Length: 68
Image 1 (tube, rainbow, N blue to C red):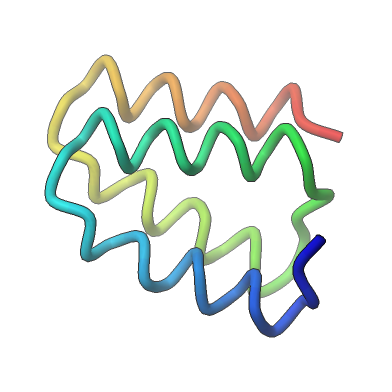
Image 2: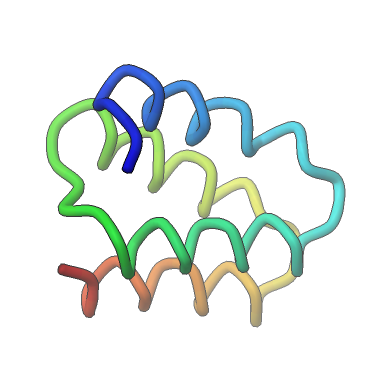
């Protein structure tokens, strides 16, 4: 489990992942494991919104709706 500050850092850093698939996969795993709110939720949506592949972007955004 990550502390809230560490989780926020991971979410913000995920924008640096070049592969749409890999970024979406990380985000999906985070959404499945953590309850996201506030700054973490905003960072998640920002990272998901920056995914170039429509399929992977939708996969990451959908995971947020079904997470913890």
